Length: 511
Image (cartoon, rainbow, N blue to C red):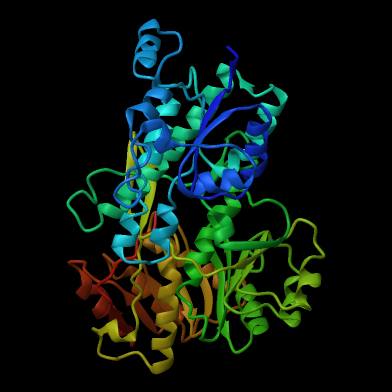
């Protein structure tokens, strides 16, 4: 059902991109109602405007808090053209129909992000605008609603093609978009207002945008979409679009590298299927990369690499010898970029500082589970020595390093390391003994001597078997959370073997 547009209400916060749409409405003789700054903007474009207060016979009040909340405005939007009773009432009360509503909302989300005081945030909770959008979207049978400046160009093109008229399908599509806008807006307000109240955990409300369609999901037969603003986190300098699996690995890489201070030694991590197959720290980034690669050069093929320092030409030359999917760095020096861009599909991401959510969310069964991010990482000051011998200073540094990797590795896991270098890890095993044996075998297969190395476990040892196997392999110090009723058995085993053990009291399961 085609519906000509004869009247429009325009009330927007952002005026950019609006000019072509105003020009089209002017050219078709559309009656335009507007308020405040929007009215002035439209008049500057040479179009005639009827002030909303002239329509309502009531001025703006309370500092502009009440402008459009009036029966003559909402009656104009909500009246049903096909209902005789509605039309009789509209005539009786002199309520002209409004065929087009163009509204964008006060920038609540942006205001919260700016860190201004609460009162300024509260003033950016839109009341009239969101009500107008909901009213127009509800009455999409007769009204076209435009709810974002991102729609102006498409709407201008649509109305140009259809001689300033729309079809029911058009109006329904834009109504759905308007409800998406209002739903997201209300979610952001709820999340802000419920902080620190009993409602903060009463309901899970998540609204992320924009939506980016991916080539496919985890496998080609699965559809996939990313919801969020990747551009706020990365500048993509080269390569193809990030895939679902790329994004999962990139997330794991970014979270792992957060454990390594950007102002400290150069650090490099290589990940495959969310687990680190190489991690190292060194005086130079080139050395850190080479040491990380040495940990498992086989698994590194096709992996995701992240560093905490700008990539220089020398490091780029070494990186260029390996096939990898993604490289993430805080910066790329000018001489390094051409080297790394020599491979067409290689993805290069320049990471920007950005705050991450405080919660993790995952679908499960017929619902969703949520938890706090694991932000705890133990340092030497958190270690409690429980054996007759204490770890040396070098062993303490190695234990701290191993814990950082262990925290981000799939359970059950065992991590073997020395100060500044991952030697091997056993990941995702159903038995902690299997995880340890896997780690020992991997380390030896790549030529590492485990004599004097250290071991980190993501959870306690229920039996002394892991300590005994580690001691036979030459491992000299162990860090684990403790908490087993048989902790003493593992402590006694360490004492027999001349090993040091420290407890942290913190478990780091990762499923």
